[in-house]
Amino acid sequence: MEIFLGAIGALIVVIIAKSVRIIGQAEVMVVERLGSFNRVARSGLNLLIPFVERAKTIDVRYFESDVTGLKKIVAATTARIDLREQVLNFPSQPVITKDNVTIDIDAVMYYRVADPQKATYSVQNLPYALETLTRTTLRNIVGDIELDQTLASRDMINRKMREVIEEASIGWGVDVTRVELQSIEPPRDIQQSMELQMRAERERRAAVTNAEASKRAAILESEGQKEAQIRKAEGEKGAAILRAEGLATARLAMADAEAEAVKRITAALPPGEVSSYLLGLRYIDALPQVAQGKGTTIFLPSEAMGVLGAIGGMKEMLKGVGGAAAEKPARSGGQLGIKPGDD
Image 1 (cartoon, rainbow, N blue to C red):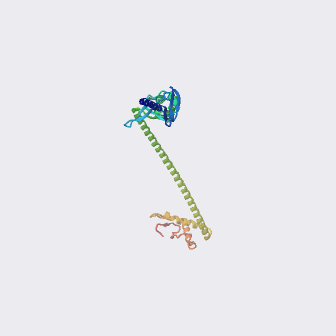
Image 2: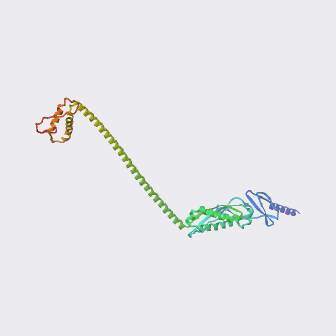
Image 3: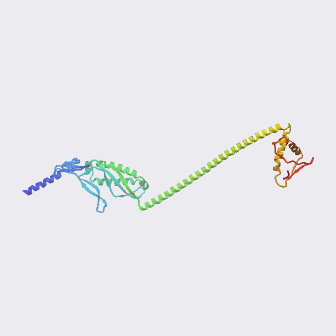
């Protein structure tokens, strides 16, 4: 009897364990009744009819770390469907470009289950289906472009992959949020050629930059020399104008002074004597310049003696006008000889 009661108690515990299910936040469970879909159990306490209802399991893939800390992908089955965004990462695969270059591409996909019923019944193994679809889509896209475009068009490849995968997986109840290329690795010889090409391109750009800098410096230097010459010419022009204006002003002042002196001489001398007086002054002013140098003898014409005599006679009358002049008697009807040093 005790054994029977113990068996009944154990059966009751098993029935309760199979009937009561507690589902966590952001998780759901697909419940089948007699082998067909019945409902989707949400988070919280859920009761199942024993031996009539059961939870439907699905395939999942997740990362797991071993004792060495190395992460690896583990495939399993579970009755709880996670509604959070999930990451599907798979090993890199070889892809052939349009110019027949084999490269290794590593891609990662972010998705979330939008319809648990479709994710359970529309596809047999959802992670494997998504991985296979991503691989084939990546091969198709990269096969239509060349290597250089593949390396420079990550955003374009990501966008096309997301569009194709989302369109194909919409019937699986999956919402693909993002598809990214983690790495693109060309062959080693291609990498070396690309490095040489990149180095040559940088050297070419540096040479072009240096040439443009030299050209710009030469242009600036020539423009500076041109501007300096222009400014120098303008300065010389202004200086010449100022000198000319000063000379003109000085000559006008001298002319005014000379005119005033002539007026005073005219007023002081008898009528008709002004011309003789001025001519004598010109003779006297010219004598020092003509008599420069040793051993020079100057012969004055006899006509000049009359002018000198007239000037000497008016010396007492015109004090302060004219300078003193040395006089020596000359022979009548002859010539007067004057040597340097004579008074």
